[in-house]
Image 1 (cartoon, protein in one colour):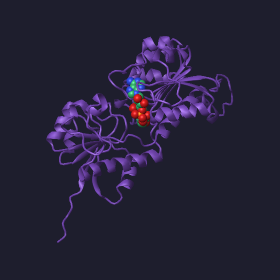
Image 2 (cartoon, rainbow, N blue to C red):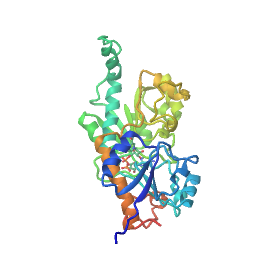
Image 3 (spheres, rainbow, N blue to C red):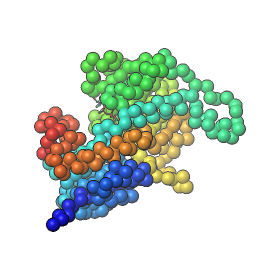
Image 4 (spheres, protein in one colour):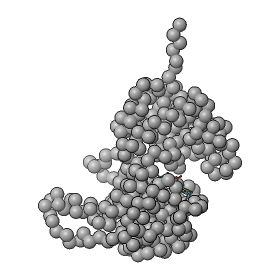
Length: 350
Ligand code: NAI
């Protein structure tokens, strides 16, 4: 007699066309039943996950204590993040209630290369030149840039992405200094304290996770200590920078340029088309209006290679969790903060 195997059901929140395409391909055998939802996960939308085994979420879904309680009460057993950062998940609260997995790396090259693309675009005024020549304006006035060769770049966070960015910068003949809370031994990287990094860097690029401790690490005080004309690149998480202080620094000509792929209030704006609307966020609108600010909407990860890796790893995470009882990409409060977890990546954390 044929036994019907029940497929694992995944409620896929905040689904975009590119997500659907890559997950449809990764799930071509229809091993999983995936429901693609336009809504973001929040206290208003969690009910959409009723009857599902797992939810799949991205950077701007709200996975707070209430959402965690509701999901757990409805029998959802797994939160599968299709990204690396997890500052939008209350992992301390989730511990013991619902498991959380992520995709720790999908293409660090995608993000590091985007950071360099933003930097080059900004300092060589490519965004201006592109618009000019499309209008047959071939004037060079106002397009003077500067050489990267010989400049000092301060890299904060020397993990997977930070190190690739360092290699790219070295290829340009730049001098690299770095700060990391946990410096890598024998890496050949010149680590300095944050104070020294602020003072010496011509360019500063953020590649560390957002935590309670480093929220607004770039603010009025730190901007005042930076070199006049510093270029700040953020492809990490928006709230590492106090946006209003950044805006003020730009207005005062202390900050020479800002390249932002992330923004602290991005959840309400990024990934949506507001071209026919009036955006209510005055700080963002003012930043975008500046000639020396480039904003992309959390796009650094968006390459074909990264999307395929994200889909494959997310579905592997779900399969391993439910079928093999292993959980190699689990994140839990104890692993992340206390180093007291029994996490061996062969067993679930609780
Ligand atoms: P990773 O975990 O390999 O490296 C992070 C590094 O930051 C580690 O070396 C760690 O020791 C260091 N670190 C931790 N806390 C720190 C602190 N308070 N100050 C300084 N350094 C600290 O992570 P990976 O893959 O390199 O990603 C870095 C960040 O990039 C992620 O946390 C995420 O926020 C962001 N990201 C952005 C994407 C985008 O599309 N814009 C895509 C993927 C990641």
